[in-house]
Amino acid sequence: MAEKSTPIIEMKGVGKNYGNINALRGVNLTVRRGEVTCILGDNGAGKSTLINIIAGLFQHSQGEYLVDGEAVQFSSPREALDRGIATVYQTLALVPLLPVWRNFFLGSELTKGRGLFQRLDIATMWEQTGDELHRMGIALEDLEQPVGTLSGGQRQVVAIARAVHFGARVLILDEPTAALGVAQSGLVLRYISAAARDHGVGVIFITHNPHHAYMVGDHFMVLQRGEVDLDAARSDLTLENLMFHMAGGAGLSALEHELHGKHNEGQPTLEGTAST
Amino acid sequence: MTTTAQQPGVGTPRRQVQSQAFWRRILKRPEAGALGGAVLVFLFFYIIAPPFRQVPAFTTVLYQASTIGIPAVAVAMLMIGGEFDLSAGVAVTTSSLAAAIFATKVVDSIWIGVAFALVFSLAVGALNGYLLIRTRLHSFLVTLGTFLMLQGLNIAITKLITGNVATGDISQMAGFSLGQAIFASNFTFGGVQISIAIVYWFLFAALATWVLLRTKVGNWIFAVGGQGDSARAVGVPVRRVKIGLFMLVGFSCWFLAMHLLFAYDTVQSGAGIGNELLYIAAAVVGGCLLTGGYGSAVGSALGAFIFGMTTEGVIYADWDPDWFQFFVGAMLLLATVVNSWIRERAMRGK
Picture 1 (tube, one colour):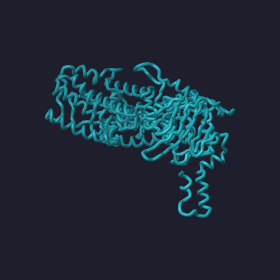
Picture 2: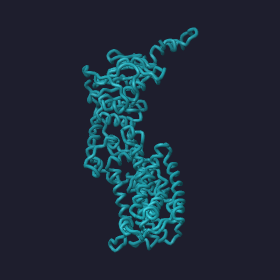
Picture 3: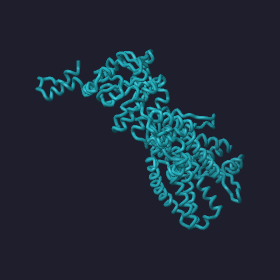
Picture 4: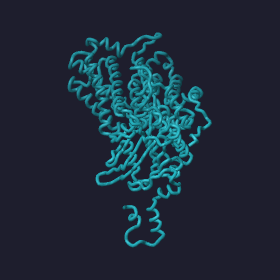
């Protein structure tokens, strides 16, 4: 396990309001080099709000967001990216009909020559794409093949490898395994682990799946209705415990109690326990 | 943790693969279908129309093809970028009218007329692109609008200014011979008369291919047409690319317009209607995908070549010229089916 270094990202009591609606409250989060922080939660739990704040898409309303110890208030994803915070969204920002290497360098193409003779440095881009993918453990038969011909997991890995190659220090992965089968998810998880351990990237891994999270995570945060329901290091947590929280935690126990036990008079139990 | 990511035992073969599968790569190119089609059409007319076999006939075919091929190269790039331009056919006429009318009725100088037409054509292209981005409508609708507007303007303005449906003859003006030398001259090569338009056509197709496959902008064009949102997300200036492509089509229309103006001295204001479909058809036969992100400039040249052969072949075979349209339609259908079959194979990575 990586020793405790200065955190790249540190959030203290971060919250977000949309008008009167309180989407996120009191989030403390630390992301260090080489660590995988898993953020779990149901739909609408506040995961997207949180990553959008980290990625620079939204600004937080309360609390402090520090990058390298310095308080920040990003006004665009570009600013976050310049600080080395990259997001790989579910759409991946890949172009299916374009060859792998062209996708890898899209928007940041390497060129040689000047002026009118400026042209793509294809050999170097091939080389670097191949090296980067190979290093991360996927061997493509042909970098000239369109990205659309790759499997879902391979596409995910190409997008992640691209972010790492272009200098990501913190990688936000938005449900990378959500649409994948078992084998494909394994490929992506292995790569998440490689990015963190071998490249020292701090990873924020957003997922629905506690099994996937427990396989690669160093630190876990479960969000529920905009609040932190669980915030624990791997050493303080079992998979069962994580699954329990993920499945709804105390709220679920109450539901179970309600369904199998006798009716509590009047007010539904679920609501009663969740709001404080 | 001690376990690093497992590296599968296979090393990346990288570049060897490229040479190994060279012929397969050719078959996977977007223009493969058009190449096969061109060979078949050539053989067809070679067998049934004896005059088609002579060399001068072949240069006529190439000339005919160049008048489709010059705009078709730009139209193909636009289609790779994910958009259509239905106004390209009449825009050619608009451009030559603008040059002729401005030169004769406004300034009495051929060169200012030519320059005015260039600015005007680029502006029409920029307007198409700007409208597309502002309205977020499909380019089919936007350019259908400009197509009808230009078609109306061509005739209305010409009538208004010249009192006629055609412009006056410009061949007596100063500078005409130089203009003709640049845009519409012929030269003899190996005992055959060859129009300079053919040379320009080849040059444009080669340049476009270089831009598409070897430059940053080319990469962006494919990306913008293939998945605009992804391209934007990685920092490609999607709007500028699209407007630039429409302006490129404007430029190609201007270029062909200048050729036609200096070749025929006068312009019929009703000309050009329907040609936009030929340009699009040439691009599609050449492997461009209607949905964008795929295609080639060389393919559009092959498509134009097929149509050139068909136009002339029908005449040499002594058929009614109306058969040409039938052939264009049949070829378009056939090519689309063959191309999508090839593309599917390519996408399966076979």
